[in-house]
Length: 526
Image 1 (cartoon, helix red, strand yellow):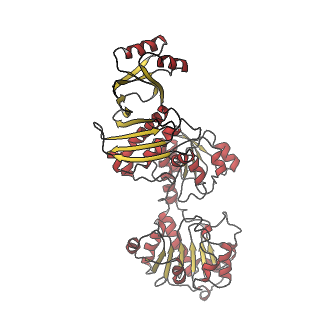
Image 2 (cartoon, rainbow, N blue to C red):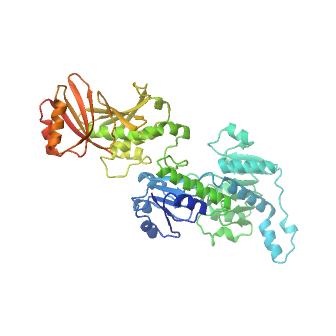
Image 3 (cartoon, rainbow, N blue to C red):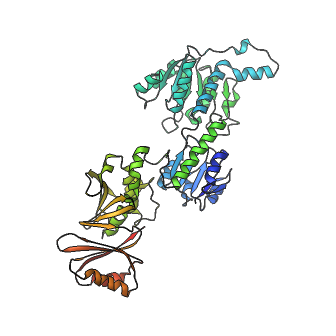
């Protein structure tokens, strides 16, 4: 059972899902220091858009394993810091598609027909019909920046109003645009031709202040701007100035650079319609966001891959269903191989054999790295930060694939070349009993128990050697729980003994000095 801190208000349905399986701590409106204090001993954090999960918060929360954002964006989470710390970040990207697209269209209609201004006027006792004459949408050109889920949904709705639809999205193919009935244009052409311009793109360094003074000068004086995506996409001071100067006609804004936006300059213009970040504020959207995020936290702690990981390499569900049993095998192979190497790690070679070689093996690579580094660093290494940690530690990793080795359908072989030039390899596979070590160097083995203390002794293959070692361990009061013996290269054999405790250095030296013993190595299996 994990401890989960819910730091923002979410729908009760999501809380109920989590509380059935895990311990819930519900505490909102926390300052940064209070959030850090609340996260001690907590494995999961669930937020919406209010709580700021900064790099400082993340670095001060060593128990944190996963952050869930009950919504689409992750702007309030320091993604780089989370990745560096090996913390998985998930969101709910499908939750507010409908609600946001509908709100964007509500803003389009409102700014076209001056609905809020006319409402306010009539409430104040005026009957100003001519003052608030509006624009028909039919025949108008709608420019969409970003044809993702929400932008595409807005395009579909615009067709119902008989609008001409143009778009700018450098990541969308012409085939996709044709399916949506949208004409793709360059950004400047989009600005020049749009009667209405609506933003539905992500916020990053390249899109911050996407619309500013120079962009407004390129637009029609009658153009209207709609932003229900991210506040910092628009230079707010420049937008106010452009509308005040008559360079563009008006705007409808739901999101702001800083929120709450009570004193924002955009709230002071009669030509700008403003709403307090309502795009995702429907009961249905909030329930979907809470449920999608809660389900992913549950999957994470059940050992499954979350559906919408923001910072974990994306692998489709069909692929993950094939390779997920081999993730533990990959970690096991890396962990055992690194323990066999005498002096440092120069190069790592990972071979994917058989059926698994036909799939995306990036999670298996990450698992091998986890296995290797867990014994050589105090840093937390997870599937999220494995590749980054490999770079930090200077691991030279090579990957290869090939046919299966009988009698197994798939194997993972991890070979580690030490600084002294020696090489050690470990082969693992997955069986009905779980991960198995089926090869160590040239020896075909089968280690049934994959947890505990393993003693690997290479000896000259002569009768009585197993009995000699077993008797010696018995005199030290050490039970042997399982044993595997394999013939290998030339005159040598390998005995693998799963024992109840590890040997001391003096005991290892004693065994090594027995007649016909070549090597004695201990391996911790976890």
